Amino acid sequence: MINPTCSSRVALVLALTMLLAVPLWQLSSHSSTGYYRKQAQDLYDNVSSYFTHEQEVYNNTLYQNGVEHSVHAQYNFSTPCEGFPDTSNIMFIMKTGASEAFQKLPVHLLTTMSCLPDFLIFSDLEQQIGKYHLHDALDRVNPALMNQHPEFELYKAQKRCPISQQDCTADIDGGWNLDKYKFLNMVDRAWEKRPGMDWYVFAEADTYIVWSNMVEWLRERAPKGPQYLGSVALLNEFPFAHGGSGYVVSGELMRNMVNNITNLASKYDTRAGDSCCGDLLFAEAVAEAGTKVQQVHPMFNGERPLSIPYGHGQWCEPIISMHHVNPEEVSMIWQFEQTRKNKDTLLIRDLYEAFMAPHLAQFRRDWDNLSDDTCFIGPDEADQEYAGDMERSRQRLERDKNPVEKEAHKSPAACAKVCEADKLVIPEDEYAALPNDVDKGHYLRKKYDQRIAEDVDGAFQRGRTCFQWRYHQGACCTSQSFKLGKPRRGAIEEDRWTSGAFVKGIHQWIDATGECAGPNWKEPF
Image (cartoon, rainbow, N blue to C red; front, side):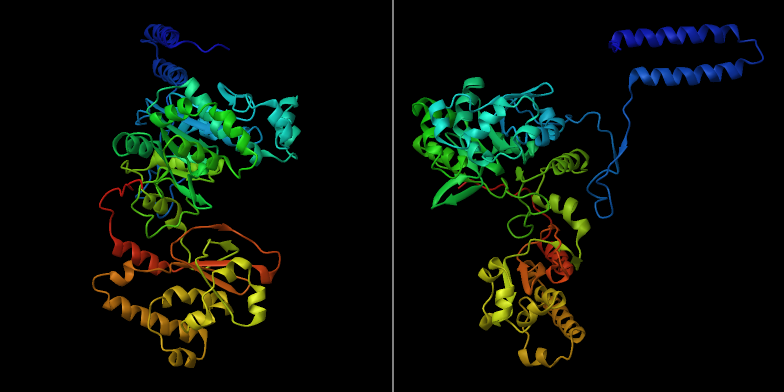
């Protein structure tokens, strides 16, 4: 059935109104007028609402205890792009692959990308998702070069596939190695298709961009000239912008790369086989063009709401990008952006309040909260062998442990005491004389409360460096930040994961730190 146009809908509603009005006028003296008028009005209401398509207000599924001050309980999602920033002269370029495109792209196209007036999607196969076209970034790679590298077997299999890629290529390796050839080919193609933009924003299909922050930063704060900006990683002391966190290239630098490096893409195609990754190759090309990467972490972030290390250095900073977000998380963050009450610059703290604060727990079984900064393992050889390699590499030496830390490996309950005892003066003989865990817990709480009472200016609370803990296979690990984490189950009882937060300490740190004076925009360096 063809939907009527707006004008035809209006005409149809008017016609129905006349059809209903005439009989009502004729029945004006009839004893049943009230009955017919009600029936006609009900019919009119139903018909008119069908043609006007009034949008419904839905329950906000993010609304729960603890976030009442952050998000609206209900929301009308009919105008998702209202208030979306002006992205003119900013070109968004998303990189994906044929093996993942139909799993990861649709949610972006339904959320943030639905409000972008223009963007480019590059993949390793030309495809179509609805009205959106995916460009093959590799179709100009030299066939002779393809034959030299086994990763192109996947590329060839994708092109041969007569059915869905999921059915054809799910068991073929090579996606990661194929990916690194896309980076410089995307530069060539993006400049060819959309030359002369002020900025080019590159991201991947598991990257989330907070466009309000991105545009504000690019328009008002990003440095001028040939710029390459992102979350810096190092390989053999060579810096590059981590691709998954997203990175930004100025139009001036794009022009320099394309115009000043002869055969840019093909030149770096020949190097890709011996390189680990495409974002490193990209940085090498940038260096050849006379520029180097500048650091803007944590605004460009390699984590997602459940893994961001909230706390010192990641609190009042604006969040521009996040990585490793799955499709459901993309939708959740977009929904949070849509329904949040405070429309000011989105800070990392705001993500904590929405996604972690309602779920703080002192003790959680079958959970890994990603605590891994400092570990405590028993001194015996058996204890050391039982713990994992990572835990051993980050353990505190026995001679450097305080009395509480020396017992932390014994149980989750003993591990939980480490953060409460952090920076307290605990005489070893006093603590050792206590007969059981309950008495030790009372002793520590008394010591801690005394220390807090003395902390008039809040320096002790602001200086906290132990916020949460994780216990697994006789290793207790603590964290200098607070992270939500995710479920993790061991196959047997002895392999269970247990995590917990020092909730009182987290709340006291937040209170002592106080409200953010404003967004802490990081200067690139």
